Image (cartoon, rainbow, N blue to C red; front, side, top):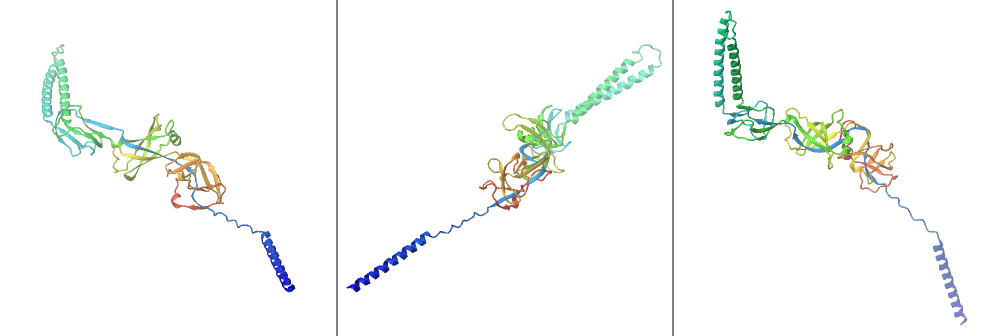
Length: 385
C-alpha cells in the first residue's frame, strides 16, 4: 500500500514539474521582444513631361471669318436695245477678264444714227469750206462791214461743224456701247438677263466681283487685341496672317490692313485682312469659311507649354534638374489654340508636367517620361505654332 502511494506521489510531482516548465516557456515566449514590421516605400511615379520653351517668340492669335468682296462692279448698258448675243462666260460663278466681250446689243439703230450724223457732218464741212472761200475772196476788198466780209457766217459755220462732229462722235460711242465688255478681271457673281431680252440704259445687267480686292473680317477680344497691340492703332509693322480652309490643306498668306471697333457681345474689335494669292492660284469663293492665325509682334522673354500642362487653380508643375516637382502660378499672357503663353517661369525649371489628371505633390521626386509627340512648340521669334 505504501508503494502505491509513493508511486502516485512521484507521478504527481513530475506532472507539477512539467506544468511549471510549460508555464515558464509560455512566459518566455510572451515576454520576448517582437520584430519591427518591415516598411514598404511607395514607388517613384513616372510622369509625362515636355520641355519648357523660353525666349522671344510671336504668339498666334486664332480667329475665324468668311471671304468677302471689298469691291464689286455693277455692270450696266449705256444704250437700249435687244440682246442678240452673250459670251460663254456669261454665267454666275464664271471668271472674266478685263476687256472680255460679254454681251452684244442689236447695233442696227445705232449704225443708222452714225451714218446720219456723219452725213450731217460732211454737209457742214462743205458749207464751211464754201463760206471760208468767199471770206478769203472778200478779204482784199475795202469793205468795213464784217458781215460783208463773211466773218459772222464763217464763225457760224465753224460752230455748226463742231456740233456736227460732236454728234458724230457721240453716235460712234453709242454704237461702240452695243458691245458690252468686262471693265475688270473678276468673277461674275450674278447675271440678270438672257439672249433676246430688251434692255434700257442704266439697267443692272450683272455683278462682277473684283477678286483682287477680297477681305476677311476677323473678330478678336480685348485680351487678344492687347496681345496683338491693336487697341488704338495697328502696329507699324503689318500683322501677318495665315489662312486655311476646312476643305483644303492650302495655306494662304494675308496681311491685316485696317481695324474697326465693334462694341457688343464678345467680339470687341474686327481686324480686316487681305489675302495674297500666288501667281496662278485660284482665289477663294466669296463666303468661304477660313481659319486664321494672326501672328503678334515679337514678345520678349516669355515661355510656352502645351495647354494640357495647366493644372487646376492656374498652376504648373515644373521639374528641376534633380527631377523634383515644383508648383508655381502661371502668369498667363494668352491661351492659344494648342499652347499656353506666360511669363516668369522659375529659373531652375527645365521640364513641365504635361498632364493635369495626375495627383502630384510639390517636392516629390518623379521619373520624367518625354513623349516626342508633345515636344513640338512655337518657334522662338519666328511666328507661332
